[in-house]
Image 1 (spheres, rainbow, N blue to C red):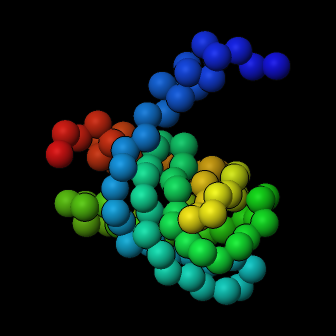
Image 2: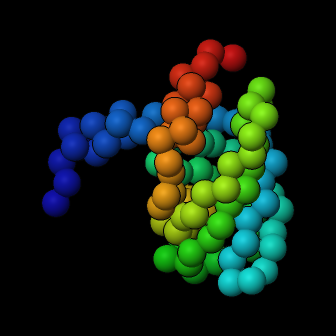
Length: 108
């Protein structure tokens, strides 16, 4: 079992930033568009009323505000709720990680 301290530590490890970012993603050769409602270095929460299975692979495309280059990141659906699903990133390169970190730490 995981203790509360470990849970809090892992949450602190990847702080989440609320946002509203246009995203397009591809699951099983189908394309979708929606919004990212929060983001961390490890993943995002995507708003949708479409029901997807946990564990599905997806390819996510989005652009960070004030950043010229769009991101394309592979991920997996890690969890879902009634208004969307959480994606765990699988292949964030160093540059993308740095840009995500800068965006997340930015004060609005």
